[in-house]
Length: 220
Image 1: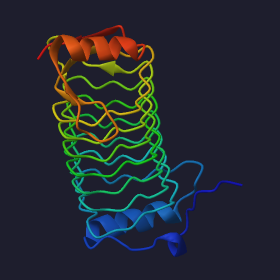
Image 2 (image 1 turned 60 degrees about the vertical axis):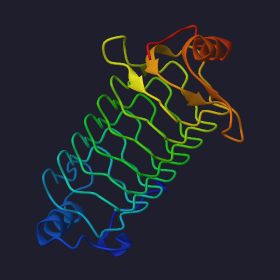
Image 3 (image 1 turned 180 degrees about the vertical axis):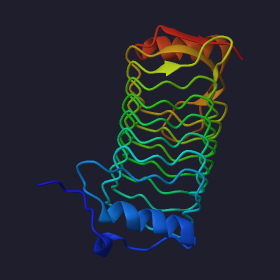
Image 4 (image 1 turned 60 degrees about the horizontal axis):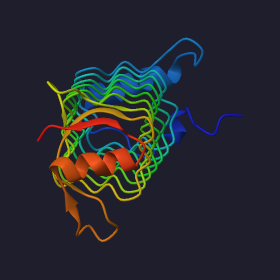
């Protein structure tokens, strides 16, 4: 039996927007074997969709600021260009989700599963990604300035390229697992538990290499 839920009684708080509520009601009434939530360009603000099974949901360009998705299944979902500022994805499953170009400043992803997610051009400045799993994710030109990545797993992820590096200035990366990561980043980065040791340039490149990420270049 799935640990995720999918009935109208399981919606903790409905969206304030009538169109988003109607789309959610239509999806809940459809066969779970064939339907997925179609909510592109809709306004879901005010909702608490925690623990729902939203796998494959199409939420591109939607307004999801401050929406709660705690423990929600969003695997394979499309959240491209969505407004996610302040949204809560604590322990959510976003495996293989497409989150390209989203604006997710201050969003919360602690212990979220973002395995193989596409986060290219995503704005995650100040986001909480502690203990999240970003293994094999792509982050071309993602903005992670001042983000908290403590104890996150970033194995085999692609941290951009020399022409589209990841912005990591001020990010906290103590305890990150970076084996096999590659790409290019802009520092400096805070690497100790107390967030008092800032590394940039050659020192940051050496730190990445020491974490098993020999193919990460520091370009700024």
